[in-house]
Length: 134
Length: 134
Length: 134
Image (cartoon, rainbow over all chains, first blue to last red):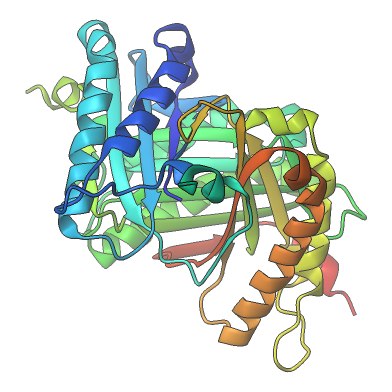
């Protein structure tokens, strides 16, 4: 956590650089600050995963429409400003990345942020100490 | 939004036409009406994405069991009748599509509708104007 | 339901046995008991699906970091002890599976359990009667 999962229609793999999008969004997350100019997300907690669908249908299938859904799940309890800053920064990065795609094809793009409402949570990895070293 | 994501065990790709399922469910979504006979979902907002798992385990693995999970995420605030009509219509379409599969193999099928509880939401694409032209 | 979805960075397919992880977690779920020593999950309802990302970015990409996200979605209304027992048992199984991976590489592992808050739910398959036979 926080992790950003990208689901998209598969024709986009030939039309835009998805690995670059993942990296750009991870960098964006690393740079988000809250109202105290403090980083909202720890570097070691930033994860972006992208999945082209194997099969899909968008709108009425009368045109070749692409679709990208970006969902960031973050831990509960961050401030409203932290959430807004995260959303605005990610939206700007998504807009910048997809500008050439938007100029030449039909595409739906939805970005949403959820706060996790989990009833059990365990962090079992070894990344955080790596990035928290003084 | 609304988008429907289908997660399934991969043996089904050889047993049923998943692209046809995606199209049938998108058409079903386009046809759902609320209590005022008004379309519940805008055409330009209908998206269905299907993902076979790379690896899976179902029940006790003593039999070849398939599994399909269908999750529709829709925006908050629609009426109870709109939600029920959407669920009933999608359940009927899923039943019709899988009837021959249900007749010949073990398969679990779960359909659920969630209302998004997002704390940030941005639509950044260009599809809606395309379908809202007078 | 309950279903467990595993999202992970794709280098892990070459480093650990993901099908074995799926099976181990399904077995773990089958074995979870509540405060009355009753099985929390019906055998016919246990499903584990694993998905390697096509593209990903973890932390600052300055090191080869892997990431695994495990999300169990269970029906609402189970007891706090049932939830805790499920989480503890799955966390132990995840720790055991990944111990050799944790010993040799950077990896983030997050396990979360959500209670479904669906507004529509339909079970359309034929698995449960199979496992409920007397």
